[in-house]
Image 1 (tube, helix red, strand yellow):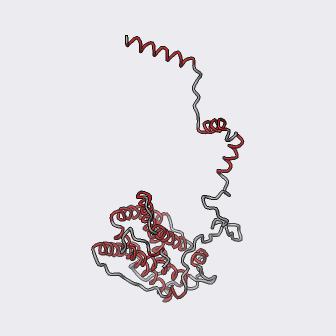
Image 2 (cartoon, rainbow, N blue to C red):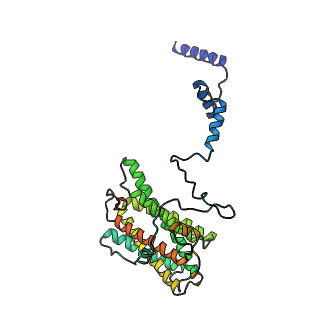
Image 3 (cartoon, rainbow, N blue to C red):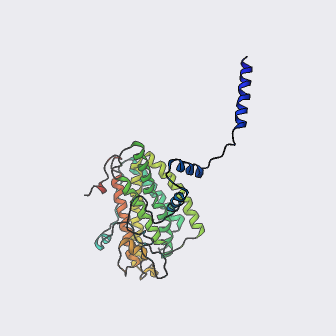
Length: 319
């Protein structure tokens, strides 16, 4: 009896389906049009106008601003966009750039020692691998070194800022001002790279080495920051100590005549804009400004390494 009932139901269902019209596949656009017609919200003409607005470049993204994008607020004589600094970064005074000193904080515990000896090992290995340890410094050797290092130096701030951003979202708590400082550091290091790129265009092999170094360093620093943010900030502090040494050596070499093509070489326009340098600024002024930035990163990261991750960032306290 049960079997007969099931069979009759099946036959009845087939008859109903055969009498129904074909089912139409509804696409996203058809669904939108159908919904609009039912609700009386949009006509087909309204939809066309809406699609046009999606590609309207005059529409601002979240924040309305009367300021043009930095690439289009100024053009050169050929009509090409000229970069204009969109942020208020630190503009160093003449006294500040001259007062930068080579400093060092002795490691005091296990975290400090791990960070310090890692940096010493990396510094020694890179000096040998890049040829920086052999012979006097010159423009070519220095550019090759700093362009490579700046492609890596912008990673720690971005990784740390991203991880703290995710943690803030995950815990649904405030970050106490760390994210902003860390992302500023990453952006500042990127500007160093863009400045020196005005003087040299790396080849394919060099770019391949940068790609490999970024892939390794990004993932190692990511894992390291998850394990011990304190050690990572101390690591960056020691890294910036070495950067200050490198730029100090370059300034001395320039003054000693070892970099003759830079003696009277004008600073790139992007450097003049970013650091607020004078119109007649030279490459020496650029090196002084970059060294001041690196000294700032050194001191900031050494300070962050002494704080708890839940402490308020002292660099945004207004003091």
